[in-house]
Image (cartoon, rainbow, N blue to C red; front, side, top):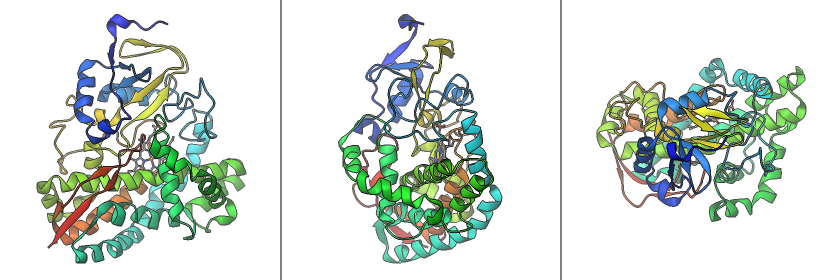
Length: 399
Ligand code: HEM
């Protein structure tokens, strides 16, 4: 099927550039105005910027496959750079089998047991920082908290944990075209990847942990031993840099909106919905990819088979046809239904863990701090897959 050039909008927008990372929202607005599907000429891929279309593509796994790869690389046309994820980059029936295991391991009952532990750890981290009065919210909070609680929940010991930062960053840095940031991280691959693989083996995992429960599914014959190790790796890959980046971006959004921080400080029980609103407002995971297994259609536009489709979830979350005052952060709005965690069969299986972590951090800070101020330059990491800060200097004014 040939692309009907006359009817289809195109743009030279670059979703992976440093400029886009600094402020993507004006470009997203232009894309939404251009049409429901826009050809991105730099990469020869399709972009979908509006809420209704992003949601309907995510809910249609038969016409929009995940097996073509989670990033820009098209596994239907080229060999993957690493063995594909058996959950994120899989379609049914493989996906149905692996997802059932992770959904059970990360069930609401398990989350309730973790909540108190996460809250206590957050208070221990935050209180000395509040006493100090100023700190770097990325180096001292966002990069510390998930690494201190999540590998524990997975069942991995403390030794060598700094490797997780590199590994987490590596996974998402490779979503777009190769850049220096990705190459720097990959230079450490020879040490970090075998270290991570060893940590995902059955004998390395604490009994009762998420990791050990994945191996119980192996013992029950639901998945193979090899698949068990890959699923533990999936939790590490998908669960670390996402939460690190999202906690950083959440603090950044709130620091830029003092009136919203005042609402949260007045009522720290709003921490969970405040986090979701920051994910809607300025998401750490700005897009996901799908690949067409065959010819199909998006909003009446014919799409060839084996085409990459960039679903701009961060743009969908600012779409004025779905959200009132879409460009305003409002932590009291009804934010459910945002697509910052995706939706459909691949919707984030770890979203309850992410919310628990962020809620613990935000409520510990909100309980102690009446105002936060940005005191210096803020910088973005050059990751092509996530929107993440490398530094966020803050001063906090205690209650
Ligand atoms: C705020 C932090 C997080 C964000 C923004 C986020 C975002 C997302 C998004 C957008 C998807 C959908 C991908 C797609 O449709 O292609 C996803 C899937 C996934 N997430 Fe998360 N995530 C976060 C935290 C976590 C955590 C903490 C875990 C693990 C405990 C996790 C594990 C996964 C897994 C395994 C998938 C694949 C699910 C599937 O394919 O069925 N995520 N996440």
